Image (cartoon, rainbow, N blue to C red):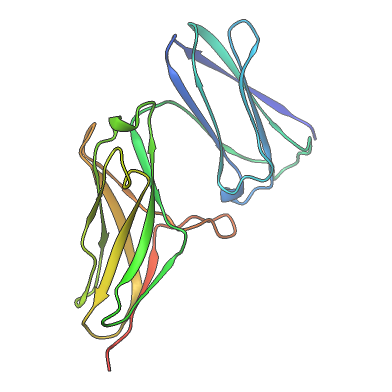
Length: 212
């Protein structure tokens, strides 16, 4: 059945609102249509995307104090018992996200393997998230990958590359890649693999080939 859900969100002028709606990553078929109205009832922001892979994200900076109204509906105007979603509404804070375009790494002796990591800083000011140190953790003996740093600006701001080398025995198993920032406060985020069938995982499969 067609249904629209309404939410009241009190904001002050200058507040940076971030709203996310997760459906497909949870295994539900809803295609969310998000609309945010200001205190006068005028449309302040909206998000309409066909079959989002992960989450529908709407952002808006309040131009005035008051109660804003958020509506969530199905773009296709369908509904049913499986049209569930998870809604998160928060004020923007300095944060970052790491992702990679592959979920497996193969490294051979005398042949370094480069593995790019995408860096997304989430803040009204990218510089609010300072340098981010990114490294592979849970590596087995004999396989190494020196940590790299993503600076707030410049060529490393949006992407860095880890370089894996091996001189040890064969290995096949899971590892993680973690980024740590010291500004605005100490916090960490794990890199995620691509969305496959709606799932985003924080584990990469590492294979180390033995030398001859």
